Image (tube, rainbow, N blue to C red; front, top):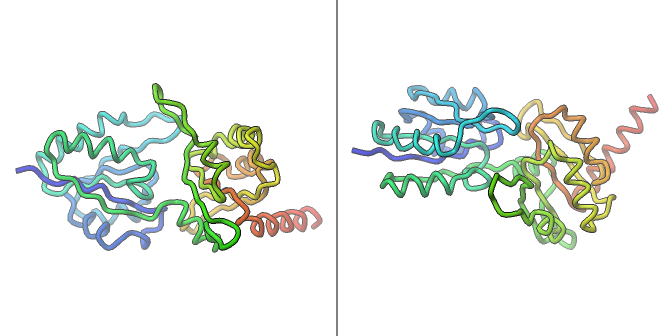
Length: 250
């Protein structure tokens, strides 16, 4: 008898942002394959399941996707409830399609449990809506990352066309991202916010303009972060600019 593989969203970090279904499945799981950035508090909910780290981190040695697929298949043959715990939401930049397709090919039942994605957690943290009447009626979620052998990304066109943009997995390439967007016609004065650890006590926020993006990212000391860009962040950028001036004056 084969088990079911549940692709579960771990959300942005805070354990109390998990869905009730996610928390229940973690408690019932026989084995949990989890991303690198899932908090210990969330992992502790897997009271009886074996924890298997399969995280991917930029610039670091990580588990190959084909190996993760095979591990999920093998686990589903031996266990009733297999959880693949992914940061944020499984269906957004989580390579869920590859795992779903592989498992279905081998006739393994798959279910998806949504999670709170980073852009929504950041919006809640900042208390700034991604959309605003008369200012922002379109939103895009992009990543500049392109895997080996993949076709070129159209993220630049998507960002320049949208009123508000959330750029995932881009903090380490902040200088390149800013240069590309400015070259494509995005004004240097476009407000930006870069935020790490949204929803957690150690949340870290930097706000400014697109022209300052590289400097703002450096202030986060390499922490994984989300870049938000658009006129809806003008007030946040202005407030942080005033705070920096006051700090320098003191």
